[in-house]
Image 1 (tube, rainbow, N blue to C red):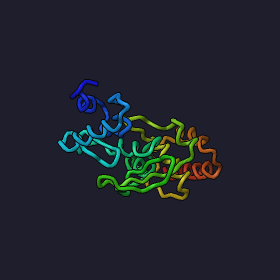
Image 2: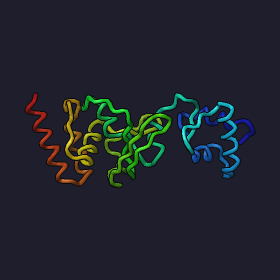
Image 3: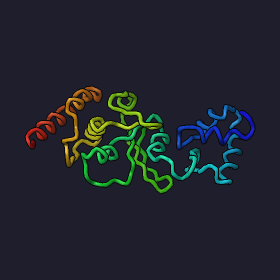
Image 4: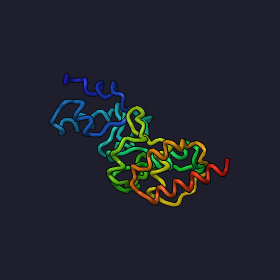
Length: 194
């Protein structure tokens, strides 16, 4: 890569968050120690923002949902974050909740993140997952099922935003009869309240 074009390559990218690995690939260099020196230089000059160890952004206005799915991969935004956005729960949750291969709670740059472990077959299946720019997010139906599958008993404030046909299409993904019975009971409950 031409001298001086390293920062330009990052700024032209559609991403708002970069891992050290992304930067190594983008800069085309195998010499990661030189890349670390360049990154340090750009951070010191205020041309890049260091979010946490191994993660950088163009500035402080990066997409926090993108960061959430980049810390541990594969991952997608789900659970309360999606349920709140879709109007299934009315309570405010400060944490961004993410489905991934392990369970962790961390705070990064003042933003709490909650990572919940889902089984590999669920995590890697793209059904009910939408890719929005540089991150993946569950549909309301997938987040609803993720929550019931992982947490079990859960209070939903409003079930009307759900497309029940899509819910029933996604249920076999989890391979769980308890989940199927819970979904059927909630479906009957939602139909009675109409």
